[in-house]
Image: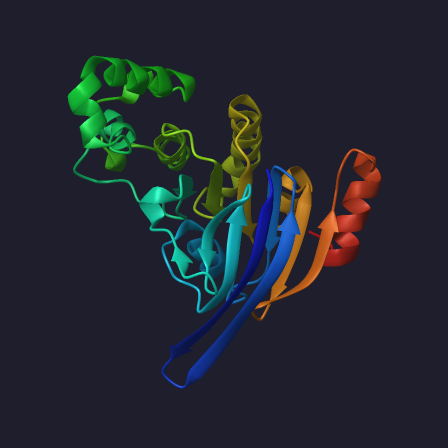
Length: 245
């Protein structure tokens, strides 16, 4: 995976003006964008996904321009083939688990090949240990179960990249470690590149192959963490950059 990001955006809220200017490149499959609240993390991945337009710059994924202000390119979100998991999971409360997962598949595909797609939904429910919950509604699920539904919905369309907005923030602290391990297993099983935004150093320690640190709308540090580092030296490097967890 190759992501080339160079985006600028001015946001105004009442008397406050926030200037975002984020630039980095990565060829890693696990990118973690770290920063405190208000650093510009969510805005950054929303622009990658096409949920918000940058003012200037470019976003290139695997050689394909998703946004390029100079070339007047701005693909709509539905054409970017990007999976997105919101912090609150954004499940449809009036749809059951199976319907939420299947909602990601275009209606035209259902019309042409409905049975095969029903089988695909059942397969995804099984992969995410949701088979017994297909008829349940979001309000009946635990936080970890809701996250698995959101992940299944995001991955069923085989996205080129998966973006996750603070994926563990809504979970009970006792569940976070287990759910982190589950997500890492899902990433390896599907082989999908991921960009995770977080303010928790524990997420960085487990996931980051490339670490991008944001502060006040700017990249202040980029650190590559790969097989050249032992687990101990990896943790030491991260803590040197972020401070102790």
